[in-house]
Length: 105
Image (cartoon, rainbow, N blue to C red):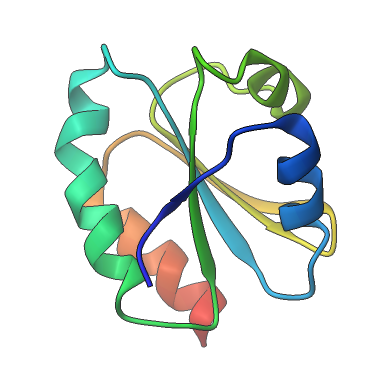
């Protein structure tokens, strides 16, 4: 499975409007905690196919970050049917695992 980068606002809108829940990792290259949690997020992406796993570089995709209202990195946002249904701010592996389990159940 793996984590797919989102490279445009149009692509973002298409992805979040699906039936399947998607978890998006909003990260930045300069963010230390982002680099620590990224491989953990990758590992979770291999555990289920009921959730889509994506990432957005906030510096490269400022339009998407503004649309979602991301204020801190990393932020993991869950979308389903075009709506934001959950969010986790910070690099907390246990909480991220709970989020993944909640939406892959």
